Length: 332
Ligand SMILES: Nc1nc2c(ncn2[C@@H]2O[C@H](COP(=O)(O)OP(=O)(O)OP(=O)(O)O)[C@@H](O)[C@H]2O)c(=O)[nH]1
Image (cartoon, rainbow, N blue to C red):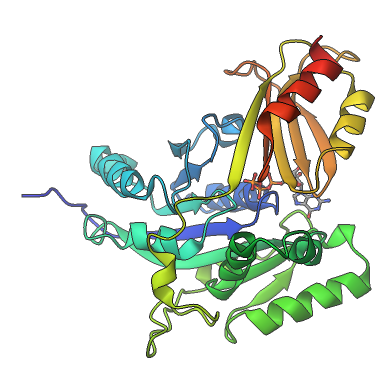
């Protein structure tokens, strides 16, 4: 007989497009858990084969799902791995709460599918889907990706399925743009879903964790979304993501200004960059973050467990061209 979990654990899906601020808000949630003496477990999903942000989650139980999107290629593995992870825990280690951070290109309903698999039904109590929106890019993405049905439908599904929405990065936009974004999101979201605005994910965590997910089962629309598709589209259809992650080894320190210039000339469809690099200007390793067309470099305190590299994520990227261009500029 299949072994099963001792109890159902409240679980939250943290969703939102690439670089919108999911990890930033998750860090705030983890601080909150620490203060409340709650024991969290975190499931991290990356489309690349490496998690360059693992240092951010030290001291927590982390299950990493790399090299694919929970929403498609590794959905079955996700269910099995999460199940065996939970069964492997001693009673004292069973988490009070689980946070699942999607890849940024995930349709949350496909993660819901994985969590509601019969294998996990006694283990997981799905509380809420929290969606983070990048206020500085949301409208732009609608036009950059106007010809990509796939990107538009991911952006929309992340809004329509959520039980809590944070319009983040409002520090980067004017009042007028913010109002436009809020209007657009309000027109897409489900009526009862709270919508809050934030910079660097500063929100009332208590309010966020209390919000309960309600699946709106009515007629055909069994998934609860108000979008104009049949909900069967969520299942089994998205196996050919045109999203890609390109990994570039960076064996030598790079010049910051030159790197900034190089990033600026990348195609608009490269949405996100992460990595660990060294700089010519100063000793040490730096966490490389590129989102909303902005470069952030944060010094890494401990020796990184991975070799310096950049991961660039986007849609329909010509990986060899980009690798070659980087090599030409920085390595040769
Ligand atoms: N200006 C500004 N930057 C932010 C804000 N929130 C997050 N960032 C920065 O945006 C970058 C991406 O943030 P993350 O929290 O890693 O985004 P993410 O959604 O986890 O990214 P992926 O998992 O790669 O999709 C980081 O450099 C953050 O410091 C914000 O409100 N304003």
